[in-house]
Amino acid sequence: MKFKSSFWFRFIILCLMVFGPINLAAQFYPAKTYSIADGLPSNAIYDVVQADNSVMWFVTSKGVTTYDAHSWYVFPDSLQLPTFLSSKIEKSSDGLIWVAGKNDTEFVIKVFDSEEWREIHVPEAWGKKQTAFSFEVIANNEHHNITLAGIRNVYHYSSNTEQWEKLSFPNGKLRKLTLP
Image (cartoon, rainbow, N blue to C red):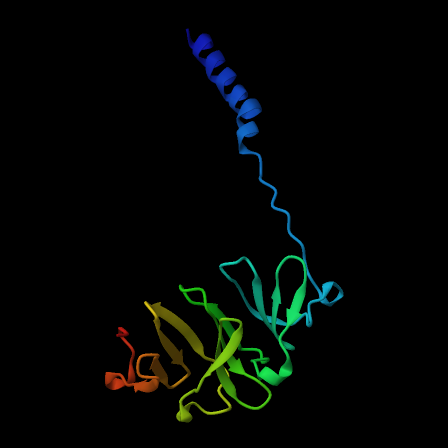
């Protein structure tokens, strides 16, 4: 009796080893690496986001760039879009594209809406030398709330009032942040 149970146990294990991996085959996802040779303006990419229409948006050392799977478009330098290492790009839930970061002269926040760029003036106290920062946009109906946080300061912007508010925290520590 012991032989029969040992035989069937080994048989089942052997079948699982031979036929089991058939269902565990890896999936292949094609990927392409793009470079300057393909039309990318710079190999230094700082942030990337995909728009609702599947267009890819990049912040590079040469400015903001889009790619629609066929061609690249580099926005002109005259728009003064961010070009420095810590620059950020984000898509809000309503589909608008937002960028924040330092260009050649100053820190800027801009939004791409209806085929044109609009600037959101940053708080005066933010400074031109700000490097490390966090940036988030929350869309609420037709209005937007922006949170801009640096090493020592946190600001909140509401498109309702078009004003920045410096947030302060008891004892200088952030515990929980709730935006209106």
